[in-house]
Amino acid sequence: MKYSIKRQMTTLFIGMVVFILLAVFVMNGNFLEEYYIHNKMQVLTQIYSTLDSFLLQEEEINSEALNDTLAPLAEKSNIALIVTDASGQVRIKMRTDAENEELKMRLVGYRFGINQKSSELLEWQESYELRKATDPVNKFDYIEMWGEFSNGNVFLLRSPLESIRESVGITNRFLAYIGVGVILISIMLVWYFSSKITRPVLELAALSQRMANLDFNAKYTSGGKNEIGILGSSFNKMSEKLEQTISELKSANNELQKDIEKKEQMEEMRTEFLGNVSHELKTPIALIQGYAEGLKEGVSDDAASREFYCDVIMDEANKMNQMVKNLLTLNQLEFGNEELSFERFNVVELVKGVIQSCDILIQQKGVKVNCIMDDAVHVWADEFKAEQVIRNYISNALNHVSGENIMEIKIVKKEETVRISVFNTGKSIPEEDIECIWDKFYKVDKAHTREYGGNGIGLSIVKAIMEAFHNDYGVKNYDNGVEFFMELDLQ
Image (cartoon, rainbow, N blue to C red):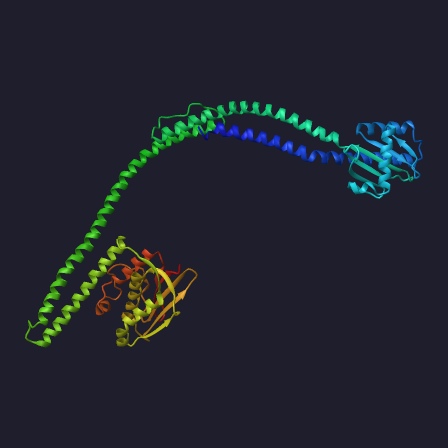
């Protein structure tokens, strides 16, 4: 398997070993020298303190106590030293004459400020300096400490750095050999232990495949008390539970199928009802319109009677025809057969156009129209459907306005939407009727609705359109009237 756990575990573990070895190489190569210099500086400071203490007490320079204390420390740390008095006379030396002469020249160079320019200052104290310098003859790097003791003697201590660099190289080569061996041993161990872990995992994978094929007789048999063993036991319990649950689901599915069939029958009855209503109304409408046109052409001798009956017939025909159109529109909206065409348009112009189309009715009823809106507010919606909602609201307001005969239309911007509201003065809607006014054929005041030719479908169309838009809509009662509102998206 390309992405097997065994391969991933092996890769991860070997990667960790390689990373640790590389980290050791980097740390050893970059920081060991600094650590060595830091410790060497401490040893030099310790030797300085020891010498200063002896010289201050005016001990014999070549005494056994001084040699016993100083010599082992200097030899162990590979430190050369020279001490001279103010006149340059050597008082303490621990190297051959040639080496001592070289140290003496280095000390003179420091005293006269010559060596400072070619060395790096590591630490400065009032009585001494610690520097990293390169010998101009052999080109080796050293840690050098020079200064004055409390009794006025001048000294120089020096320790080479080449030994630590050689140690770093040897250590890195040794780590490389050890690292190769560790990696090889790690590969074998990880491969062995990962095989023991992945074997039961593969068994669980096969078990899950059989369970996916609804074979619930498959059981985990490897056992064990570790996490994988617990997982296998859980698989067995899950297999038993799934078998029981699927049996219950089959029974529930049968019941659900019956409910679905029943719901489909109800939907078919509803669709058939709307279709039948539309079909049944179209025939009498056509007949009424036909007879009305016949009467207008002179069927009756009494001109006044002919005119009156013709107007009544044609008026009723128009009402019934409008109801059929509304029912068809509502049916398409409720069943999702009406496609929405969203576009950006100026809703202020749309509202003003609807108001202008109702101007004759507004003047006949003596309604005062107040418009509170900006010059232009652009929204995203189906413009034709939005006009239907606004026209229904305005027509509804004109049909129910009374009292002060005021109709107020407001367009208010929110953060992401625009609220269009239509308010009319008059009677409030009874609270028990507010939830029902959106239902088909529901009429609060049937007598009044009959007067203006309403059929209780307009607000149902509003509900269907707004739910298709997925926008808010509703109605609010006030002490002096009723307000219907809708919201459209700005974006």
